[in-house]
Amino acid sequence: MNKAQTHPTNEKQNQKIATGDRAILPDGAKTVPIYVMGKRYEVPETLTIMKAMEFVGFKFIRGAGCRGGICGACSTVYRKAGDYKLHFGLACQTVVEPNMVLTQIPFYPANRAVYNIEEIEPTAESVYALYPELFRCVACNNCTKACPMDVEVMDYISAIKQGDLAKAAVLSFDCIQCGLCASRCMGELPQYHIAQLVRRIYGKYIQPRAEHLKKRVQEIDSGKYDGIVKALTEMELEELKRRYLESEREPNMALPGEWLPKDQEYL
Amino acid sequence: MKVLYYPGCTLKTKARNLGDTAVESLALLDIELEELSRWNCCGAVHSLADDDLIHLVAPVRVLIRALEQGGGRLVTICSMCYNTLARANRVMRDDPEKRKTINLFMDEEPDYQGEVEVVHLLSMFRDEVGWDLLRERIKIPLKGLKIAPYYGCTLQRPREVGIEPVGRFDLMKHFIEALGAEAVSMTSADRCCGSYQILGNPEVAKDASSIILADAGKSGADALVLSCPLCEFNLDRNQGVLFEEGRISKVVPAFYFTQLLALALGVDPRRCHLELNSEASIGLLRDKGIIAS
Ligand code: FES
Image 1 (cartoon, rainbow over the protein chains, first blue to last red):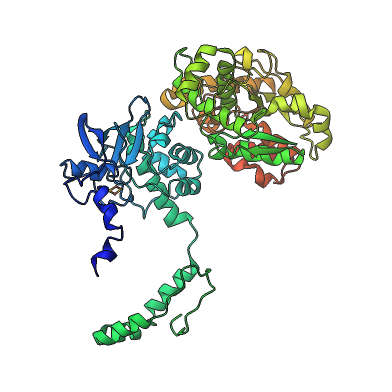
Image 2: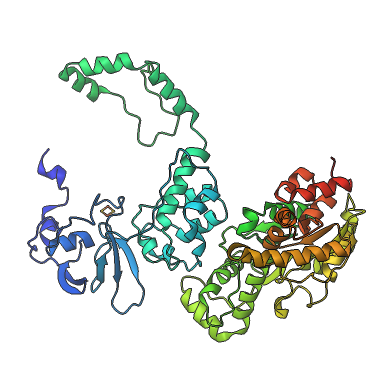
């Protein structure tokens, strides 16, 4: 692959705007002041908090994982100049703002109950028994306000108290276990651990099973695909490449169930 | 008619015999209890510390949800939810300083000033449905059943939110009579059942419940009627224990008012969740021929 493919931005722009890929500030790039744990740094205005911190010399050993907004390792709390509100975000997703005062919270201690999912009764009572602190919720809503994924945390806690595990599992689905909810809870609840237990119970015992998946697993077990897998693994590399390039591909916007390949032998 | 309805957590879990029978009965009276689409726990108990405002946040949030969904009137059934919501509502209506503090704390919500009216389902029968209409709709009159109204603490106190003045028990009496049963009175209709002392201090709670049940026995009642899940636990489900421990000599089961209503309106007894009551309750209804044996 040539350079143009990996860096599609035009060269002129590249010189003006810092991307964080290099530690030396390009000519004319604008910087803004941010305060990391109280200390002032000048950082390129286009960077995320994570890249800005690396730009000024921080090195992440903890508190960074996927860099894609999904692992929940990079929880960050910040305030803006002249604003009493606390703001929350993921360092890898949130772009710096002038005069923001921030710190990262890579980990927050939270009670995690031990259970064996194979033996658990799939009821709300099981959740209450493992996490009795659930009932210390005073509905202050600080958890919801702290969630960088916009999960309605207080609402899923309410749903669990109402015995509605299915609702809680759905409401908490976007949780990435960053722990900011627990850091702000005046009832000292470990919301994200409770929600994970609920989703495990829901997934294992309550959610209906997909029949087509069961059927496909049976087919695999019965050896239906063994022949073709063996043939592919023994195939010459060139032949494999040729087949790959010629393979049919479902069009991007095809409606579910509308498109079928020409070769339907293994469907 | 449609009314906004706040069930509360217990009616969705341990006290389905109170919540489900209410929804089904009201439908038979052409009233749809429309559950709030979004709600949280009411907080269960109104804090008596004057400056304990954080415990008002939960009930006020419920009231804001009700306002968002049309407001006007919010019907609730559990005595404790009713008490907590109605008292929080009064604070927001009548105390400008506390109202300001709470609204400021809940700055992600619209300001609330007590616009919603919190109504207990029993009051709605008296004030809106009317005893005559209720009597007309009864399919299986609860003939031969002697029932004592039991209000407990939270339906009448404090006076500002009471569904009836302290010491008067006419509302439940009329309700019982409309169902075709006989109302008998007992002196401890508003005595405390021991409430949540049953958890931390069970002896105290058992003593309190035993006094009420002994009184009920003396009054000649076959059963008590009530509207509070905690009272139901102490006075009904726990009755076997009280009897075994020799604290009471006669078993007098208790029912939620909505269960008796459902039975009288002809709802299938299997849908009245009698299995959640004490064993004696089913026995009594069989003896009186109200449910098939
Ligand atoms: S590093 Fe994974 S969410 Fe930010």
